[in-house]
Image 1 (cartoon, one colour):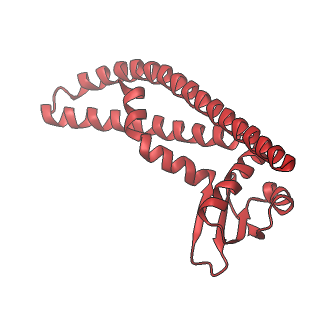
Image 2 (cartoon, one colour):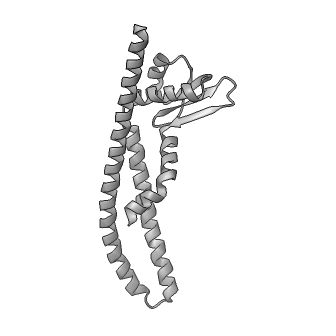
Image 3 (cartoon, helix red, strand yellow):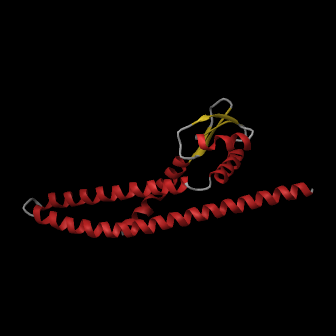
Length: 183
């Protein structure tokens, strides 16, 4: 019974650490969004001045053509800013403590794919995975971090690469991020 309590305490402590890490990541993301908001405001002021100059030059053209050009310029500027924000979020995720994240992802894998037979990662995380899981190491993959696991038949795959996680979060949050950055 004593060993089970020790194991439960270690698991609880690990989960608390993971929760703390994820909270820190959320704080970093909020900081990035605030920084981007400031940059957007500065860029918007500069773009506003540039737009006013362009508007003066375009007044000779049809009014609808001017509106289309303004929207195009603004959308391109917003697209550039959003792309930069996505890359910064991915970099922040990549800078999280790798071993703790890999451990967390392995636990998640045990629940979702208990018969996992192969695990794949980047070269940096290979040694850690080989020493901390009984799942056979498949091979190195091109990724900033995270893991991919498959069953023996390779018919089921869980993709927990940082890029995939960031993309899922990004897709779910894109509207909210855009609203915060551009309003």
